[in-house]
Image 1 (cartoon, rainbow, N blue to C red):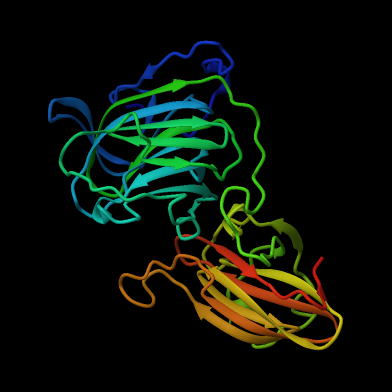
Image 2: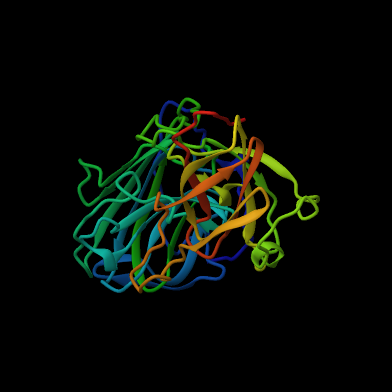
Length: 370
């Protein structure tokens, strides 16, 4: 396979608006596969010509897939692994992704849909029946996977081509044509890869919170988000002054339909620059105390009017060896509000698996939010 840099050439594509769709089969010995950085062996396995992908990601060159179907045969063992399929890959760090967790066979998280923003897969932010489904896998056998993509939705089939294994009611990236990819961390066999472009679906807009699934009353739907910061800047601080914030630039960011603010959507994670500030301004009619219930990923420190009042860790594996660090409304603080303007600032630091914040302020009597 010829190795080249990541490029999508739109001019060479099948017309997505055509009335008919043509299936494109791509054998694994084709030069259309980009394999740079991946470990693999081309081989016939259990009667099927394909590839043993040992580690890494391979993707198609000169393809911009938007809507249609993707199909592939896959054969994997019971070892801990995360073999998957990516689509609408505008670059290696931004795409939609579905993968299998063989070692979680039978469990609620036996597989996963997650968007990837700026190289960060947010699986800790996207858990539950909207994003994963239980299934008992059989190992060291061939299975067929088909993904049907239309607009901001996808249906994922596994062996049973009549009933979807998982229906993704909201693809979390804005629809944008990109290439297709396969990935793994350890040995997995792939064969019979093909895709079928479809006419482009009507443009869709992101659903509002609560449109697809219930969200709690009192959800905070808009935050002020800073640029990324050097983690050490505020990590050891117990106070936060106007001087500390003088150079901070803020941008208003809305939460997703689930109620989560996915920070990775807006900020690329870097070593030593893996923290942001997330601010909520509250105008109080009088001095009072309000409960704020929240969830975060992965580390947090909370300041109220410049004073640190809380810190916590929700890091993967931090509480016991099975702890996933998934986000939820597990924590709360009681805000000592003064009359007038109050600043609630979260220092949110990412470690692995998702960078996010969500919060509920149910009792809003006597207070006002922007």
